[in-house]
Length: 261
Image: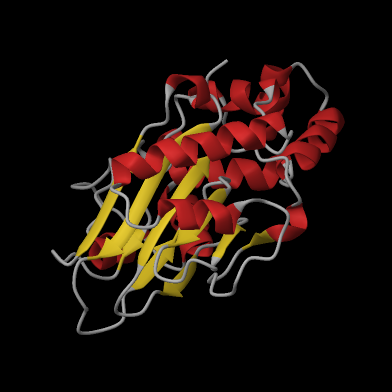
C-alpha cells in the first residue's frame, strides 16, 4: 500500500531570495512506497545575512548531506516541535526524505538539531556525499536512489503496512481510536507497534499528522475549534497560524476567514 496521500509541507524559510534555491525530485517507482522526495537546498551566492531554516515536524526521517564539507552527513528527524536552524550565509545540502515509519536504522543516530559534525556511523553516508560532489541534482538523485536501495537490502529501510494504511487514510482519522480501528488493532497494540516502528506514540503521531494536514485542510476538519487549532499550532511551531503566515508567506485553507493572529 502506497503512502501517496501524505505530502509533508516545505519548511519555513527566513528569506525568499533568488540566491537560495530549493528543489525536489520524486523517487523512482520502485522506491515510491518508502521515499517521499529527494531534495536540494543551496545558495547560489553569498548571502548578506544568515539564513534561518524553520523545520516543522512531519514524522519523516531524512538522510542529510553537506556538499560544502563532504565529511558532514547525518540522519535527522524532529519529534513534535519545530526548530530553527541557522545555516549561515553559504550552504549546499542534499537529502532523502523518507515516509514516516520506514526508517528502521539505528535510532540513536537520529539528530533533531543542526548537523555540523563529521559522520562516523556505520552507514555509507560520507562515501555517498563524495560521490555526489560536483554533480547536477538529477545525477545526484540516481546516486541517492542507489543508497536507498542499499538501505533496503540491509534492512535499514522498509515499508510497513500499519503506517502505510494510516498515511493513505488520513481523511478518515480524527482520533487515536480511529487510527486503531483502521489498523484493526487495540489501542494498546497500536501503541506498542507504532513505538517500535516510528518512535512515536499514537497521540504524538496524530499531533504531527494533524499539523501537517492543517496546511492543506480547514482547521475545523481537524480540530475541535479555532482555539484548539491555534494552541496546537503554536505549541508545535512556535507561531500562531497568523504569525506563521506573515513570517513565511504560507497560505492556509481558511485564509480570508477569521483566524487568530
